[in-house]
Image 1 (tube, rainbow, N blue to C red):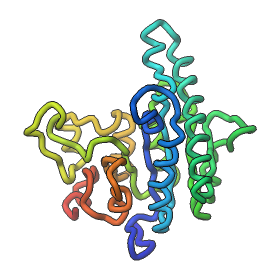
Image 2 (cartoon, rainbow, N blue to C red):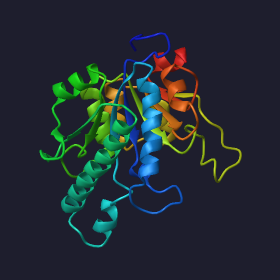
Image 3 (cartoon, helix red, strand yellow):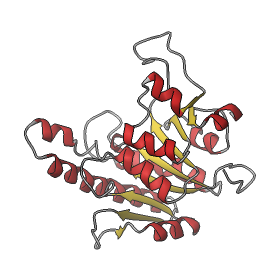
Image 4 (cartoon, helix red, strand yellow):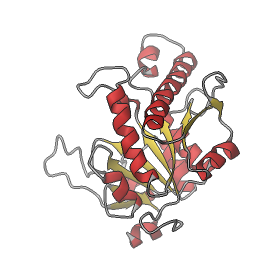
Length: 250
């Protein structure tokens, strides 16, 4: 981790959002501009701290490939539809962030030159160094991989200091806190402990990538006020998943 200013202990983060983050607050499918505006304000708060932010977003608010596959659709086709849907979500986020004064670029692993830049690692890094937010859409560009895997891969490629897994739960628990009132939240866990306990932080491919690159992950409730700023300041919010050295220092 690199000290970049007096308030943030992270230089560059990758924020992983589910597609449902853009869904209407009352449920349902689609893109809600109010939710996009909410996310933009959350991101702006950490950009204002001097943190470089890249974002990977899913497509569950628009399309779920598993639904198509369950009805006989070819998985490659279903996955490509999902990757294209992430570009739509990326454009919605870009628009919302530009409205709050954040220069933003959408890069996509599936080339759509009329609407977004192609994903080029060094160009993405250059945008980040200039203080621009970069939305990395189109998944990995290949079927059979989740956007969790895309997030872990892109985080490693752009040399991020942290992956922030945005959820609606304030961390990782011993059990589902909605079903088990005795469930307790972990403050920090090693990668090995997560595997031993079979905790589903990310899909296994994504999690293994983070573990191999010693990429710390913080799981937090993105909708809690001030939570993202607290996380980048190093406060004990959410659940940190990292190597033994970082967990011991938590």
